[in-house]
Image (cartoon, rainbow, N blue to C red; front, side, top):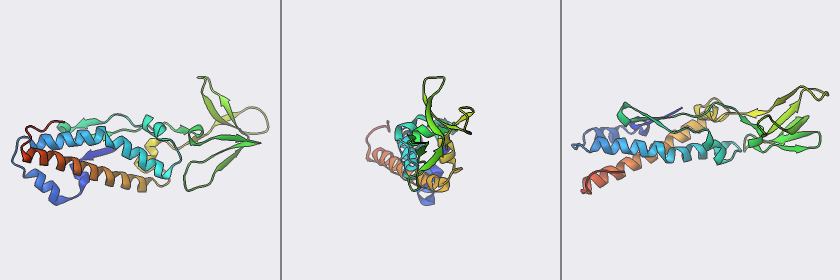
Length: 193
């Protein structure tokens, strides 16, 4: 879960100046800026910051980022992410010899799973399986961290990912609010978006 509102900007002068705007349309500019930031750039920023640390494709990360929900009359947006773990197939699972390799972190090395192989699951999907012993059964599926764990900071590098996401989203929100209020103050009619 990631919360987007005016407070993430962190600049008290900027927030105070927003509060003193004498226009009916000023709150609407802020509301639309939050909606724009949460609906558009947020998904890209979350995906980009996760991929800076993890070896996973953007398409797979964006699958687990849900549409934002808006609260407080549109002045607060919350973006929920999935806590379903991602299979090792998404982390580059490759079968080699007596096992299989995959790599979760960009900075780390490859992880070898002895007895690892690619099998077809009940739904027809390829799954990364590992045998528990020398017998053909039992087998278990190999998973990596979930997008929710990465975003909330509950995984390796999580606090750094969370901090960099918040910083970039704050800058995007600040630019969008500035753009909309400048357009309003220049007299380009009502603030639309």
